[in-house]
Amino acid sequence: MRAMPVKREHPVQIRNVMTSNVATVSPLTPLVTVCRMMRKRKISCVLVMDGKKILGIISERDLVRTISRKGGDLMGSNASDAMSSPVETLTTDVTLEKAVQLMRQQGYRRFPILNEDGALIGIVTRSDVLRTFTRELEIAHEEMKDLAIRDYLTGLYNRRFFMAVMEKEFYRSKRYDVPLSLILLDIDDFKKFNDLHGHQYGDQILMTLSEILKRLSRTSDIISRFGGEEFTIIVPKVESKQAAYFAERLRAALQEAGITVSVGVISFPEANLRFPDDLIRRADAAMYYAKEHGKNRVKVWDQDMEKMRDPDSTD
Image (cartoon, rainbow, N blue to C red):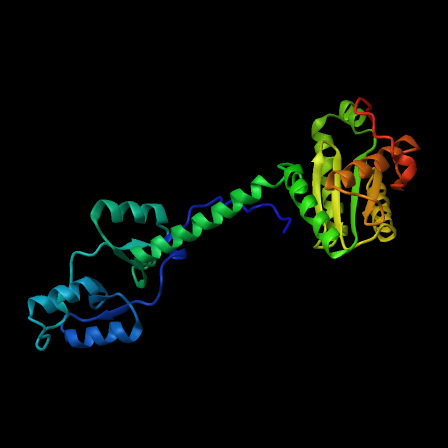
């Protein structure tokens, strides 16, 4: 769920597309036998071979054309009467793009596939190619959708996705009267650290923190990079006491890794909230309170924190 999309570094090769369900016949094989073979094996073509040499190919279209020419009578006809030739072969290392290019240029609908020893090992049809391209496009589309909701550095969900999920979870919690907690944490003195050690090292801190959050969270928890050095965790069906305990585990694990954070915790329906933004605002207030009172600590929101965080304040 939280994994970054996998990038394809190598083009798809024919060996990944071909089917080994290829039938061969001799030039003298009765055409009736060819028809029965194709129907029984549920294939769209057969290769006509003389030993290891490919002489031609018989497709369903070739059969229809031959039957029409023979007036529907196939008796006395054999494979050589119906086959199309010549047949171009490809090796397993040819890319899918190259096969498509040849199909377009030469008008071929299928290619027999040979191994490095020149032996027939499979066949690729236009249907195989189209099916593979469709699957690749579907995968690419899913990856693009995933990229749109992910933070580029950490691989966590981004703020836009967090806001959408926060609204959905808030109203679900309200409707079904189940608890919902939000944890907001901010890395202590991150700006000073960045200025002292450089942004590249700062990025490493952000990625380390992200990995710890993912490792300690449940599958149902939604972890997001809220912005800069702020992170949020939506914790469904968990009340404030449990959420505070979870937040403390996170804080301790991060401290052990050399990262200190100030953490704010808010839960619904324990707090009197009307809108999702109320949950976010009060989690931020609790986090700010923790930062103002020593940092590297967890604070659960209470009524004394109604004062909002000063927008001009820094770490």
